[in-house]
Length: 427
Image 1: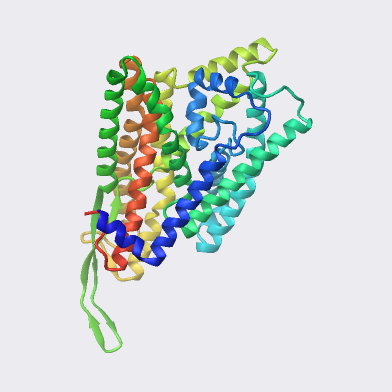
Image 2: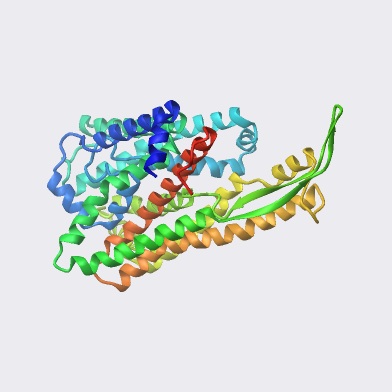
């Protein structure tokens, strides 16, 4: 392993990518420690200690929400904009056409996502400022006051900056930039989560379940991520010029979790949205509005594991199927095989091949979706059965994201190492 790392650092292009990614992550961690002005840190700490929903939201803000930093909104507006754009692709023909136009179409959709992120960040920033004002974290001020407008501009600019940094990592660094920034925020918060558990009087009894679940999640995620269905594809003999190329058999690999960690991120973002909106109205002067907001916030909070866990599981399964449908298109794959003289033994080319691939994809996606959902809600079940392990509720989701990002990054490093005839990381 050490020799592989040294070999990777000796390759100039890989070394540049690693150092560039580490540099972006360093800037990201510095920004999480830069708070907006006028924040009462003691009141902010009390607010997060009494609200697990905000703690879960902080996971996807990269750790900047708990410090009310200039990047406090994190990538939540961008994630929500991505979800909305993907939903629009299913109902708006023009966007659906763009998704099929290769690099140009992807760039245009990405540009629309960036435009949509700005108003979403502004709206989410306003709601968060109202929440902080009601909790006494920042001084109360009107919507058009200089203080409120400066906060909204700072938080919106912070989200746009993170979005740009994530795209830089995707283009010039390693892995998916957005997932990498979320990964960095989670890893940076691990000491803050682990130290209170370990230093408690019964810390060992509380930490062991956390450790056991972490090891099991790591093993399960790695095992399932590597699982795939290999479909044999036979290519007929072809004549090109004066040469005849004999038919050969290859395999079409179909991963169990083609969507990766994206369904978890999407599911939590959607699940947090109504609870976050309700949080802003709990202090309303209208009694029925405040009561309804309190009910929604409680029902969609990790403090209510039955309702929260059921919705969480259902959303993970839904978004696994939803995102897989964009990642793998049976019609395009069947058409590609037909044009290149390939066929699946026992299946006729064309529509029968498309139906076969769709049927296989649905079956293996069901297993992957059930696995992701089960891993996501297992910490909720354990924390309900074992008192004193509430931190595991957040740790399970965090661990799932961390392991998935690490595995995908290792695969990219492995591919680049093999291209340079080095011995890879993964054996």
